[in-house]
Length: 231
Picture 1 (cartoon, rainbow, N blue to C red):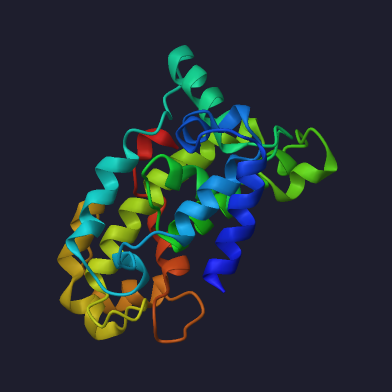
Picture 2: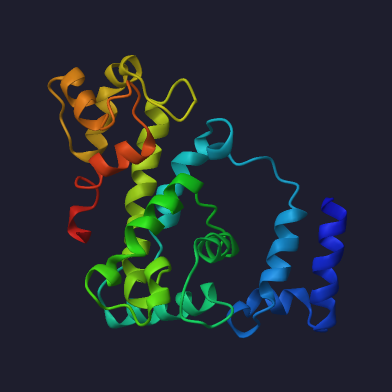
């Protein structure tokens, strides 16, 4: 199945008679660049990322990697964001889907944990809608440029939260139980938070009262503490 998929993708790429190195370097100029990226993903022989299966020290490297994203409110940073947005938007329609954001980050060498990119995307894609600033109705479900900076800011925030969440999740099941939370309570100091009563704080974070803290709940709780200067 993988061989068949690759054959179909390569045929489309070859029909354009463009060297793959050129395509990868000029993604925003060539809409069919997605074909090359898909081939690259299908043929990737690297092991499953740590955030997808087992824990690894690689998780700790995500924060400095995301720090390089252009989120400052300066003219130069805005220029970089525009270039990045166009690189993420190969078909040039002015909207970014979740898949385009994921592939765009991969093309930059920033393999983002799926829970992180999903939370960051959801938190950003409807901001313009809420303020009545979407360019068209289609913008309700996608990220437009005026939401792109918030998406990048959220990536930074949720990446740090993910790092702490994974360190608390000693059972490696993407859930934090009460015992794990009590044991790792000191790790929350990375957020500048000092918890006096672990059980009380656990109940606050565990919004659905299911007895386990999911990343969505941990993210909703911790977002207020991460990089407050970016709020």
